[in-house]
Image: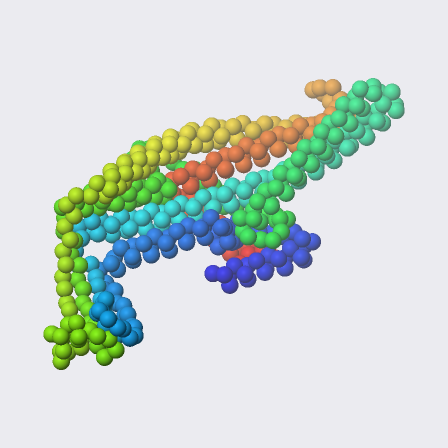
Length: 448
């Protein structure tokens, strides 16, 4: 994985150097790099490893442990301990009522960690997709604003010429100059926003520079997510399932804590000991041991029955309260998720309608430009007063403004649909379509 990420970063870096510290990158490649390099995903991967280790620890308690103790020395007087040269010991748990609950709790914790990892991957994909769509929208807006700035500059020139000819007042020139200045200011703000988005995208991908540009052809159409009646009250988010799994894990822990008292715990053990009495007075004080074997072997099975443990009862009550809290937190999170998803569906429908209105406004503005251009090609107009070049530039400015409004509404609609794809568990399918489009890009595009 590290090697693949290194090759990808190398290709992007080379492309950046060739393009003057900027590079194009496809949506599929951006998502792929982010999934490999984002620190949040790596954090949850470590959490999965930790949860797997916790489950192994809960299961391996039944596997005997083995140990050895070696020592040798001289002694005088009354022996204070058995003169052991070497002792080999093995011990394991045989049966415990609580341990089964502990294993189930660890298994639920592992499932919660895996679901949280899947949820974080989905969030990273969503973050990259929304950032990429926003950056692409800004780049398209900047192209429109270049045309808009050109029309505003021509409008200033026309106003100056008309002022010199006495056809316009200075107020008309000032208004044209202000329009051009406002367009330049809006363009600078948009360039700053695009730079911030590029920087954020590069950080998500783990790249060392922030001048990235998008590839329009690598963005698949964002599908409309239709709501079915059965889905309205169902949560399909890995994050919600992770919260429920975490609540079950705490519940199993609480069950195990409450089943501790008055339930036996059985332990198996085996011990071999080699004894040496030559360097001490052990046989003097224990003459019955004289001429006996210095090898000892014991195999035993012990049973412990907890009868009264107030401290453990308090811990069990605390664990049960924590389990209840986790359950109600998961229920609250689920209700908030369902409410947010229903709101997103309503917003998507409203934004689709707004996008349609913006599209019609833009088409009307285009038609108005065509009408004025047609009238300017004739010496007179039979239906209206003669149009001037100034009217043409103002119409072009209006068309550019309508186009910017359309691009903005289209981005808002795409962002909402991407958010809805993430909340319905269908974002991965759309990302795979983007990856397929990335594979079909020409060799000049940055892809891996």
